[in-house]
Amino acid sequence: MADRKRSGGRAGNARRTSSLVPSQMPWKQPINNDKPTEPLSLDGIHSIHNGCIRILKEIGIEFLNPESLEIFKKAGCKVKGTNVKMDEDFVMEMLKTAPAQFSVTPRNKDQKIIIGGKYMSFGSVSSPPNLWDLARGKRSGTWESYVEFIKLTQFFNCIHFSGGYPVEPIDIHASVRHLDCLYEKLILCDKVVHAYSLGKERVEDVMEMVRIAGGLSLEEFNSECHMYTNINSVSPLKHDYPMIEGAMIHARRNQAVIVTPFTLAGAMAPVTMSGAVALSLAEGLSAIALLQYINPGCPVGLGTFTSNVDMKTGAPAFGTPEYMRATQMTGQMCRFYGLPMRSSGTCAANVPDGQAMWETSNSLWAAVQSGTNMVYHAAGWLEGGLIASPEKFVMDCEVLQHIQRYFDESIVDTAIDNIAIDTIKEVGPDGHFFGCQHTQDRYETAFYQPMISDWSNFEAWELKGGVWTAERAHKVYKEIINEFQAPIIDISIKDELAEFVTKRKSEGGAPTDF
Image (cartoon, rainbow, N blue to C red; front, side, top):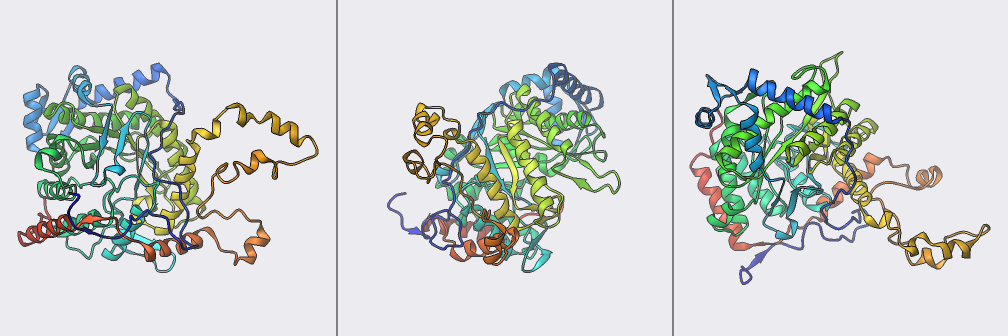
């Protein structure tokens, strides 16, 4: 590989010289050493587990994929039509083989992430059909906007993996969209990438492109995890055909599958959060049991997307107290089952305003409190996932950097020099600490330095033009796009990717109906 010609400039997350492009913290996967918030008692854990098992054993889960039904029959589960019932012994036996931690290695091995344990990782917004920015307002997703979000994903060091399409480029036909999108993503971004589990063709195309981009043989690709997919159940009580098909393909080739039921209490799940969590777990564990039966030890994770609706309108609500508690409860259950956990950075706000930030912050800190390992939609999400916003992306990355700094062990370092008794004695009751040597030795790294927060007083802020946060974020986003340089990729690999895309397009791409 070393002797091949190379294409591309310096890495997309390199330090910039423009005063508008933020100075950011280096790329690092955070380690959460805090004790998780655990609202459930031991009895509460067993109550939810027992409820989950009763759903699986007495009610069953609908699987619309015929192949999965045959596999469940072979495993000894009760299959009637599309309904699958399984007992506790089967589920718990399957969970024994699921890894509590695994790694995902993208084409840039320095961007490898660990899923599980105390590790956290944050991903970009995924799948909104629309976008909103300060200059042009709300509009449908386009190829141009898709590319911009991929550049933001690559630029920000606090983003560890790329979700699905950060906005759907609806000006690219659905049959070939995955080919164009993954080609551009693999060229512009060297972080962990995702495949939509929307049928065999799309999944296998993405797998082949990830293999090519990593310079891997087929055996090397299949031997360890290089990408992931996320599947959602169709709540209540159902798994559809294409997502289960894609999940099974991933499992057989040792690529990660995150199973995330989307349960809204009061609409798609019981109005009580314990009932909603129990239903979510039953849907998730049923799919994980299937995947572990297919390939024991394949990398899987259990996601939570349990929130509530506004009972006045039926609209989804996110970042609510109920959402936070459901996330924390699911964290306890994931530890009970020994599974890595996924949650999300969400809000119901329509523009990047105060509501957007407090709801998203609630969601992100609930992820911290719950022991989440993989945080979807951590930057850029609006309108309950219907809008992606570049300004919101930048603003969210400020919060993610807060979290990353919060985990820095230097803050709670109690070494004698940090207790600073001699310095306190030197300054005394009438002095200050600005000029003392202890401060001078540490002032550059003592505190978090914001990317877009403005810490000046009102008069100074007004003299600078009185620029509101979203306006500052807009300027930063535009400057990042203007200065972006793609990460290096071997020309031969780039050419091979392009040839694969051309070939698959000539063959018609992927079907658009299931």
